[in-house]
Length: 256
Length: 328
Image 1: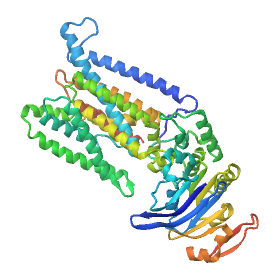
Image 2 (image 1 turned 120 degrees about the vertical axis):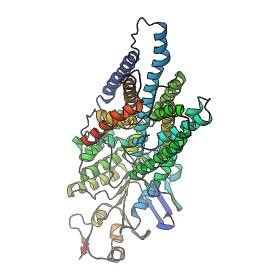
Image 3 (image 1 turned 60 degrees about the vertical axis):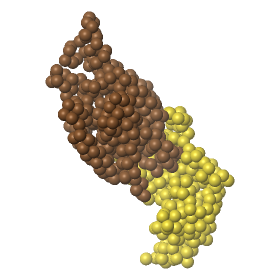
């Protein structure tokens, strides 16, 4: 369980994230939604200790995040960042095995378990025959899936995903979200997803955190947060809200 | 670039062990052959007193020091490249070698009688140069590769100008040996020089191998490494200190031998891929072979006169590097 208690994050003197609080329960998916520059990525980056907090506290399983070592955090929280560029020829399997680093000993040879976990992660991400391929030979969408596979290989309880579907085709977008949801429901793991796709957020998230100017404008069930007033205030657009006939979830259509 | 992939799962370890064994054998062979070649041709049998002295007091210490220096520079290059995510990072280009050279010179000028002052000053010089380059390259947004290379060039040229100023204060006889030494020269080798350099190689190898898996993650990206459990500040400090130690002892013993740290890790990666757990130890062996080979040429090409070994490594290294760059 992750408790975010009234945190503020500064870049220099600018408050980029202001007094944000929320709780992420085991098994839950939380979507972070907001306009560009609303502080979404900054907030996500603070959740695994990358960025220091100006004020407030983050508790991971009731213990302060800053009291954990890097390895301990990496075993509990995995990040799916926006694209990474590699300058050296690294194979897909080597890249995914990086997700097992936190479990390795000092000299760090992978165990059979590490390899099995990495292979399963690749298989889950539809990358079965990609092991020996080089990262810089892959398409953007394939790389994105490898990045997800690396995060899955950590077996961490909390996944932090920063626009994970930005480069993915329709089929793989659905694959990614089904995978994350399946993982959360069956293994009591949880995920925080930054996305610009409000319909994906509505479809897959248990709760939505709507950010405006670094602060929380609204927080709660998708149907409560995604209302016309909130969306007008954040995105300055008019929307049509109805029910998706297939999933019975809220559907958002922009009116141009 | 096509990588000759070694399958981690089935036999990466054993295949690499075989390759490692083969390279070690090649190194011993290179040392053996180098010991026989030179202005005085030797065979290992039937040595007279004078030939024994040449072999054991002059030639072998020099060859072993060459191997040690080659291993040091290649190790420093391989680890700095992974740490800084830049295949062009090299002690010579980053100004680390020049820092060590200036340190050695200062020790030579002020503590001429203390042999051990040189490696200590060289280590201090290398550390200071590394620190300066790193501080200059760092910005609020992190460290980018262009800034790093640029800082390296600035520090290198600045230190070069101080070295030139200092050399102009030397008398003519000293000046010639100094110019030779600056280009990389093994002709002043001593047993103590070898022991010290070899000890640095062993320490450096142990530290760098222990950090090699963390370096695999750093090579992908610092933030990625951090996310997946690497204490980046600690790894950075260890690698900077170790490469300064390696370059410091190497430069104190033999001057600035260029291109070894650039070309050797490059060749190794081309052959076996980018996994630092292999790249680091293999670079050490290949670096040793490369410098033993280059120094043998330096001793024999225009015998009985000699060339500085750094001139040979640059002559071989520069075209080879251009070829590799174009091939990729």
